[in-house]
Amino acid sequence: MQDVLAELVAVWRTGATAGVGTVVRTFRSAPRQPGSAMVVAPDGTVSGSVSGGCVEGAVYQSAMEVVETGLPRLERYGVSDDDAFAVGLTCGGILDIFIEPVSSQTFPHLEAVVEAIDAHRPVAVATVIAHTDPAWLGRRLAIGPDTADGSLGSARADDAVIDDARGLLAAGRSEVLTYGPDGQRRGQGMEVFVASHAPRPRMLVFGAIDFAAAVAQQGSFLGYRVTVCDARPLFATNARFPTADEVVVDWPHRYLAAQVAARTIDTRTVICVLTHDAKFDIPLLEVALRLDVGYVGAMGSRRTHDDRVARLREAGLTDAELSRLSSPIGLDLGARTPQETAVSIAAEIIARRWSGGGRPLSEIDGRIHHDDKDSHQ
Image (cartoon, rainbow, N blue to C red; front, side, top):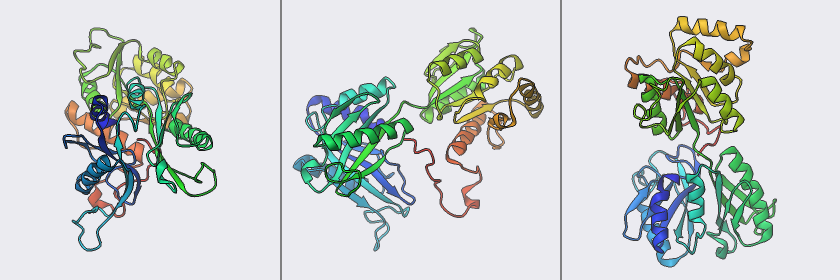
């Protein structure tokens, strides 16, 4: 949803109504994940995607219809039994898509949600996508860690969904929750899709070298909020790292420790140590390898790696802590240039996140997509 918010809020601010299709549930090899969305503006222009092209035409037609009728609906798309290239998914997956009209009347809190996302504040949107009473469809709550705006239809339902949505928000997960018609914990009759909009995960790149510029560009492309940090002001400049969200002049270990104290580091954080200079690397890795983060990689030759590990052992790091280090950094792609090396680093980060093996898909049997162990969205 975040990739179409700008287009959606632009329609919202004019007082017009957009048709929005949101993936709320997937089965098997579905091409897009829950939360992916497509917006149809009043002039017929389309933003976003729900299936990579398989069912966009059908969703477009449904979006135009719900704008006309004002009645949201939940639709399921899968492979057509008669013709795999008819309205359906040629990949063999199944998508549940909630299609609704969105305007300042149906979603009065949209602008506040956008402001929270832009300010990197966590916010979840809970929407009723199925109910025994059609009048409940499309009702929603905007939920922060300490706030909640809107209502689903009853205080009981609101209280139950707010509690559960905050748990999903803390974990960065988006999924469908099932309740009784009035929010009963045990029962059927109401389904609520909770879309969690956690702040973008962070990528911290230490070492203002040419490889760092390429890594920062890859990180930005993958959706990370990228920080480049180096103690040398001559090299750590915005001009050298135009794709980074921020460039910081500080000793790497001191900056990382300050970020830990400020609680801006979480399990999704990626740390790339590119300085390959012991006076920077060792104090930095002493901090980094003791954190519960998504990835820690360090650049350097195998000789540099062996020396680095020996120094870290002397500093008191355990085997378990050292096992978190990816060094030499990146997958074996035969990379030579900074740009190629950055791709190999990005590939290792992706493989680590999704438990991929890094082998060619042509050599592997079974499913292409790995299970979403972290449910990031």
